[in-house]
Length: 59
Image (tube, rainbow, N blue to C red; front, top):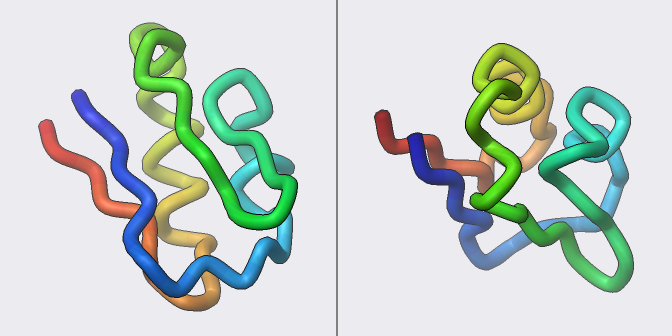
């Protein structure tokens, strides 16, 4: 699984609250793909919770 943050992130912090091992939010969200393995469920939850739908998940 690979995670990408598309342009348009509003830095709301939702993704980080769902999956802090993968997502970090400062000016915008970033995803650490090295930590996705073992965190797939929370990555999917974070993507679904994103209010601007900028998290893409490739299986």
